[in-house]
Image 1 (cartoon, helix red, strand yellow):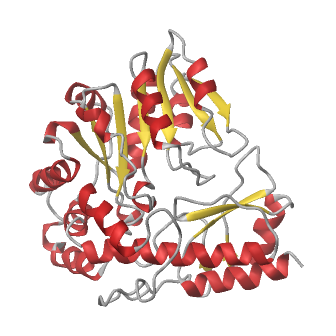
Image 2 (cartoon, one colour; image 1 turned 90 degrees about the vertical axis):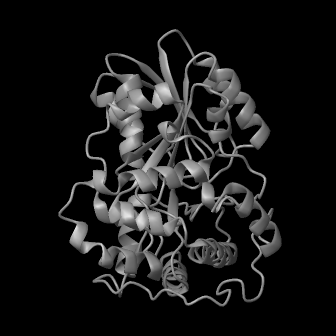
Length: 371
């Protein structure tokens, strides 16, 4: 779904600017995908920010019809996906690096800009894949505590820039806090900082943003700035298990990053991604069901008077007031899996959105655990 189409849909669907859900929006008359049948059927797995409904029926059909091609190397089907992504993002194909999930792209960037003592600036807490991988190759990480609203402290991050800074990492919306940067402040920061160093914008949760005019930093890539954007098929498209994502960057930057890509992806994932990009009904379904689940989570937390951060993602970060290790254990006894510890917030928990059945289990479990 092109950004302009997405913006218009958010407006007409009534999702923009709020977390209301209009009657009937959650189904929209489509042939809904069945919930995957797994060994976790009796467990509410709400700890990994996955899409519990995916892949869509159309994607599943494409995967099964592609089995005969699974003996081939990905180069056979690579080019068409590259062209689809480039069209979606409004850039040429030499701006795109396809990766094994966005995590591979994150790690490639960490290696590229952090090796041999390069310095990287990031919020704390935030998603760690790029940071910890870079540390393995000698990078020094400046972890800047989130502000009082649990958002990126852009002023302090800018203050930390020095001659050794190789990259600034921004996860927006942020994982695990779910916060979203003001769009004007984000753009201004990226424009200014990119004149001094490389800026990496992790947009894994971009599709869940309900403000229809919120920009992707791909717009700065189009202006030839020192900006890299990562996106993934793991979340809204429901392809986390297939491992496919991509980077968008100026061609010379993309080429450098491509040199540090190792695993890449596979034929089935490529074919699944190609079909997913065409399945607008499932895209809309995933977003609307995510809003429905978040509203239900908010209600539970409000009933229990537990503080939480309004989320722009497919998870909610809330304060339990109890050690997270204890919460993990107690919730597991109720067959509900919640997010891991996110230091320094050891009395906060991250809960992913799931099916409404999952959320009901979470509701019952949390009420019991919290007494």
